[in-house]
Length: 127
Image 1 (cartoon, rainbow, N blue to C red):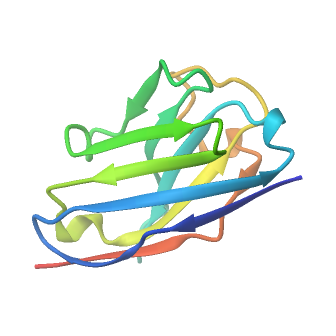
Image 2 (cartoon, rainbow, N blue to C red; image 1 turned 30 degrees about the vertical axis):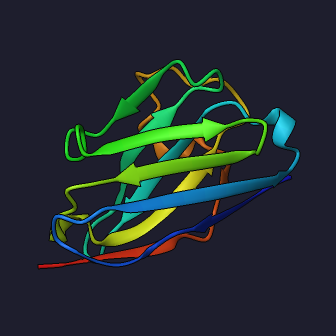
C-alpha cells in the first residue's frame, strides 16, 4: 500500500502563485510514475502533469503548460507542483497519483493508469 497526502492548497488571487506538495508513505519503493490531476465542479478529472521516476521526463496539460512545474524528490518521497500565473479556471481540487509501473508520456494522462490517489487539496483562484 502507498499513502499519498497532499498539502499546500488555498485561496490565491488571479496571477498569483501556489506550491503543492504530496508526501508518499508506505511502499514508496514500488512507486514509479507520479502525476497531478484536478477535478473542478461540473468537470471530470483532468490531467495536469506527470513525471517519471528518474525525474528526467515530464508532461503537462496544454491548459497549464508554461505556468506549472512538476518535480519530485525521491529521497524525501515527495511530489511537488509549482503553479504560477494562476487563473480562475485553475480552481479545482488537486490530486496527486502514483503508479506502480513506469508510464510512457503517451499514456500518462490517463487516470486509470494510476494505482494510488491522495485525498486532494483545494485550490481556489479568485478573479
